[in-house]
Length: 136
Image (tube, rainbow, N blue to C red; front, side):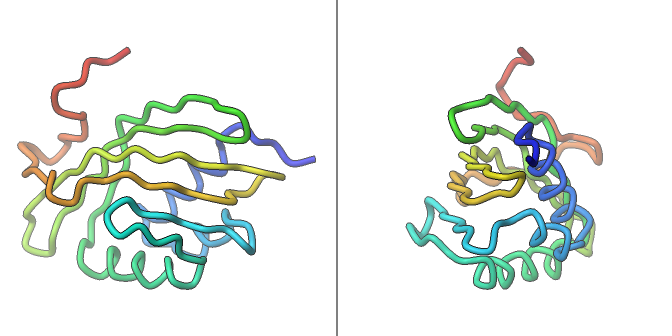
C-alpha cells in the first residue's frame, strides 16, 4: 500500500519548480482534477499541463517555499509561497493555499486558491517568506 504522508506533494511541486513536468504528472492519478479559484474550472492532467508549460516558459526560475501543511481526512491543506523570476531578473511572489486529496500515493485532486492580482515584487533573491505571516 502506498504512503499518503505528503511526499507525493513534495515531488509534485519539486517537478514544477525544476521544470520537470513529467515528474509532476507522475504524481497525479490518471483521473486527477486540478481546480483553480480564478476560473472555477476543474482541469484534467493534460489541460493542466498546458498551464504548467506556460509557467515554465515564462518564468525560468520558480520556487515553492514557506510551506505549511496540515493533514485532513483524505489529504492535506497546504499554504505556501510561489516565487518566480523572469528572464530579465524581475521577481514576483504569490501566497497560495491548496487543498490536495491523496489516494494510494497519488494526488487525485488539487483545489488551488491563488489571488492572481495579489502578486507582489520580491525584495531579495532569497525572499520566499509569506509577508505578514508569523512562523508557527
